[in-house]
Image 1: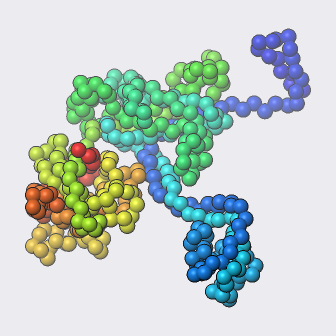
Image 2 (image 1 turned 45 degrees about the vertical axis):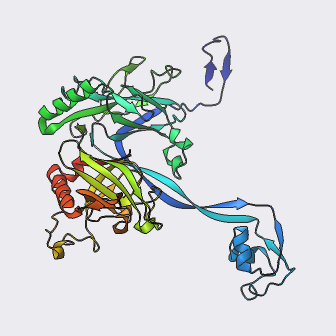
Image 3 (image 1 turned 120 degrees about the horizontal axis):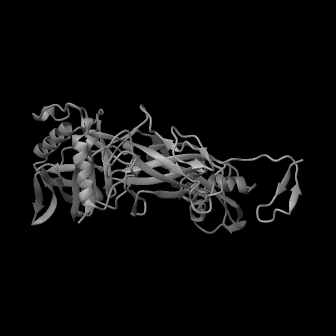
Length: 433
């Protein structure tokens, strides 16, 4: 039988049954992109049993609506009521209402997809997969790999964490995602998940990064992840097993492989930030009906002299489909889109050129591509169900801004710019004045 002795009290020993030693493991580390989507969840609320007395004018449907249940729920809970006699209730009749009430609500689900590319200034996630390590902390550094790039080889890169703080090291807890409201949060119980941006508060440093990438081969540089748990406060005595790609450091004389992605074929490649279309919402025009009302803003592009105005639907911003409202403030990526409603030849009958790639569709981790938010021609919110309508000038009525004008010319100018830059290199940032 094994004999256990105590470090602080060596004179005390304990004979135990055979022991199984669990050695915590850091199994993997990689970069990822996140997708957040709305899902409908059914939950059951337990209520106190209630007897309802039918009043004049009551129907079973009215009672169900009043009590937040369905007719089917009442039929299940009251043995006197059936499908056959549900329309025959009488004044003074006692009805047993259901004690358990099912309700539906919209919640969010998050999923992660591995990626090996990113840009300076854009949101990234780093996922560290562990085993037998829940509740403990993990730190990461993102380091310059292969050769000198935006920093000297093996030097840690400056990062901005999800709290807006800048540091070369970021720390989070394994299983921290379990404290969120995502419906699938328990899937991440053994993961340390970091939301970061490769960024610096020093504008001089950021310019040096951009200059270095301009000179680099393919305008990219290679980075890798260093994951660490054994040097953090309170965890120095832990005998952690790392399963990375290469070695850095040791635990009590044993070399550890706690570097990931620092081998050919696995590098994370970062490039400079792409072009940004900056939209600033400034005016609202309300007609009394949401479908014909409009939110209007101006737009400019940092690396171009293209500028103009954007019209969107009116109303409180939402990520949900079918609401005929503008989308939330934030940063968005784009992909090309075609459909029966928006074919490449949509404007040919009006004498305009056929679109080579289709229409830009915008999305981000919160706004699904399925929402179908496009950039297309139009003048007011009446022409949009969430989409962005560019114009060269403002449309006014009685000195009030009500939309945009000259939309066709500005639309084709934007399309030409996006095609020239590559749609994957252009982002949209929407702000309010």
